[in-house]
Length: 504
Image (cartoon, rainbow, N blue to C red):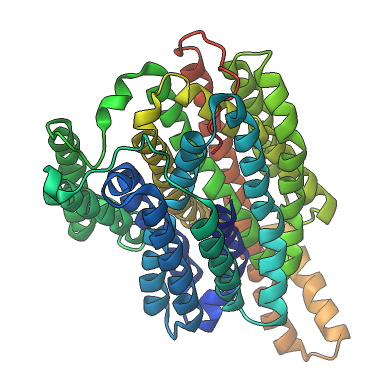
């Protein structure tokens, strides 16, 4: 739980620090989102390989290696002198942290008898959701009072403690299958290469697409073609391997396949909305990093309170009905955010986030319960890896799509609003005259007041266009969330077995 807590904490604290990272490293806000997406894609590369590495190295040893890599790379992230160096170490951090959640889940499933798995997963989940609760506030406090670099340094003591406790307390179960190269286990270089190249190309397309005007650019078209070819090829290649890095055969289970697709959509909306809210609060409303973190944190508290309730409800209702309820509530929160204006108060922002989080509490556990209901224990490692891979790909796609929406819709709304700034518009003339009069009353000369009034009105137009763009992005995410509902009706009717819920 400690290592996963550290990994989740690192994601949430980075969100509120993005404007500070961009300013300190001389990068635009769009470029700074590489700090999030590069980490997610690096996560995605290693996620589905957790089962294979566990079989080769042993689950405990592989887990400790991942914790060590994550901890060291966190320290190097804090020392990064440039955005390029920070992204490089974030990639290393993502490679180390990618397997922490699925391997933690697999360790719990393998280590506890069936009767105690439910309690083990509940405690694990309670610990993990504390990270998003304190993450934004802690990240904002550290950024405002010290430096954004400390959001990475705080991982070091947690990582050392996790390594020490894992060394003494965690043991591989006797029935865990270990294979070595002497037993005929081979490194699937082709599968790993296709996966890494395909996901790397996806990262380039997502992060550079808006800057390069998407498919109008030969550069983007080339990388998109590489992405499609590699990701399609890796599926066909892995299906033919005796010891695949990714076991796509588990997708034959209908519940697992539909749950994984639902997790893709959930990751898309969750990561995008979590990245957008601090950007909105800090760039348009003038919130500090800590204050924007305080807007997000109450939502995490709602999740902590609701998780035990969801666990009880899972024993009485099918997972699909809880998911449908969660989607409707979370979408309502996003649609409420779509009605934000530049005049919203702190309480409105907090309540909207809490409403969205209330729905999220009814999604993670039921979707996980439905996904792993029919997966055998021997294939848990592969299943958890692919399941979390879907979430991360959705998350990186969501962040890139959200930033593109912001840029495009902001340009659109600005062009519409500017069309009214003409001498023939009486409201514009009145606004210009009243603003100039206000400036003259503050000591500006007549010519200066006229010029400054135009600048103030245009700046307000830019802020209004930005606010409308954020509203559009939240509305699109709310609609996308509703796509999960039809998937629930395609699942097989079944009640989750007590003790088999795998927490995400």
